[in-house]
Image (tube, rainbow, N blue to C red; front, side, top):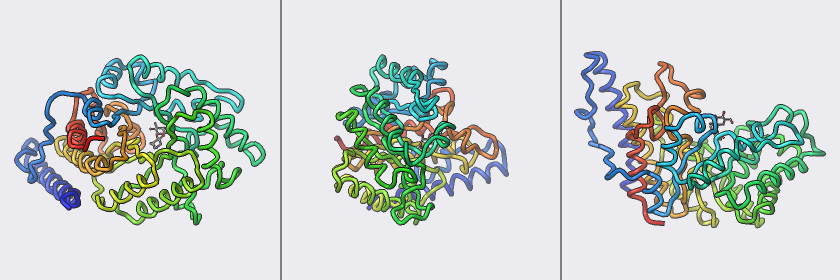
Length: 384
Ligand code: 9MR
């Protein structure tokens, strides 16, 4: 019951902090001191210096981050931070079709292999994202795919890519974001070229091909928009649950659900009871759960960094403390590690031009309150 009130508390905190921040801006530019006004005395104290990866590991969890070759190969500080904080990485771009498939008959594994090698030499696990997605497709794809070649294209792609990493992969996002209720179908499936040219079985087929290519890999269905207590997210949870039930009932080789968890610092409609129930329903299907892409959007938060970081941290801790109560949750990955490299600076920039701060480390790779919040969530998580 205590958990249920957490987001209400955060809502209050947000209200207090933003009101005070605006008031203090009106009165004096330097007058704002969040310590004086933190009504909830949340200090986000994390004991000791141990990395978040190690803290997670102690609990039987894996923590890691999305990386791309461009930033990792050009910034030794990022490489050092990944090495220090993470036990698992996932390529942000390099295993998507637009990177892997220059033409319909060729594969370019070089960028992804560079990342796999980074993982290997740093003793990190390596996960794959993503084999089937309606985005990040090369231009030749739409021009080429039709009802005659779609199955063959899917078979060739999944078989070649999954075999390439067989034995060296932690898990695969086999199908990504296949549900979209806005498309208006009764089964909730998104209208994609795969659905159009193969039919609704394409998801099951994709999992079967992946399992055949690497019988040992953990195979994941990954999606977003599942977290909040809104009619849209509620409906999506239901649709995803139905999809997974259906796949399991057919004996499809699927092992886990990936919950992306792109959270918003200003979104307070979270119901821990409902979310926990969803997680345990997934677990009861004999599926593991991975938090695959967590970050906290700060687009609409007050510009004051002390205020913003506090709300972002609270969002991380409140969400993860609920999620980690579910024993089926085995991994948490942030979508990036440092604010220097985040998709949100391009996709969801702040109107005031200030740099976004959605990740555990700041743009200079210093640990932020978000890092403390994640550390606390791992420290307080039940043992796996
Ligand atoms: O962060 C990724 C961004 O840099 C890419 O341009 C985009 C298209 O490849 O994909 C982003 O990552 C997405 C992920 O693959 C799937 N879930 C949503 C992520 C953020 O959009």
